Length: 440
Ligand code: ASP
Image (cartoon, rainbow, N blue to C red):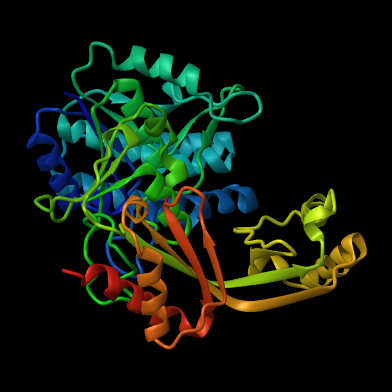
């Protein structure tokens, strides 16, 4: 059995935390490959190494010098080395890195050095080989991640190595330049290594014990989710639950590898498992989790005999396409159609222009917009098994005195989306949570 462990920024924030990481790895012989982020915040108000490196790059671009920001980076890594009592030539590593930053003059290269340095130190601490992501994680000429090449190179690099530390967040493009993933991208790196290693589990170590069934800032002490499927993760994370983003784990999803979210600061907690459909078992819970977001706008279009008018939807969608607007949902009826759109995209006159163009394109009988709408996604495979789920959901919302503005049930029966006024968001979340999680 092989486990790949990814440790996030808080787990790497200082020497004490890195010792915890070493203890966690040592506690289980199957934890063979480790992927690390750059040191993150040690306390509220602290600055992440990656942010200091972006600042370093700006300094280099403006003045040709790494400046104050890189002094802080050096101080952090010196501190970590001293705290860990590592016998390591840190000064040379730091000055070589600084020279390369000045030579490369690249934002991605500079930003990637946090992971590079933290992986070097972690490898020294664990006394295992270091694998530079640059050698094994590749992007193609168009800048897209090259999964096939990466898999081949990584497999070759891991072969014969019982253990290794791989730097997260970056790789190399087809022109030999370092390129990073988007922010938080070490989650992707961990998933890539898990796939190449043929891992039976991808452990993602962070500073919380997994997913909660609802946002704890809104619902007091929500239950922890023990297990959810990839599909449920997708629904919950795009609606705001952000421990781990569903897009970032595509390599393990494709390879059917389960993920376990674990807490570096409470390793004894069970965490949350994210399972491929083939390994998912019904938990007995009707609803797995509830997530939501505020600030959506609904564009509502009505026209009699809309259903018979060929190309109606096409014309409306062309307007959205022209303005490069993506929509979240499209609840529709026989003579009505509506689009739920993140209000952010409709600012500065865009909404007015879109409405005008829809009017011209399809001459609706009625076109209205509603803003300040919050969406709440009630997610769970269990909903399709249990009769009366939506009755319970809407009764609970009605009992809370909240008016439902919109309903959309995904065709998968995996989620029901409810739109309410922004001002009722918190009340609705609490009512729905109480209904489904305080049931027994
Ligand atoms: N260090 C990078 C960031 O802050 C990547 C990561 O931690 O996943 O975004």
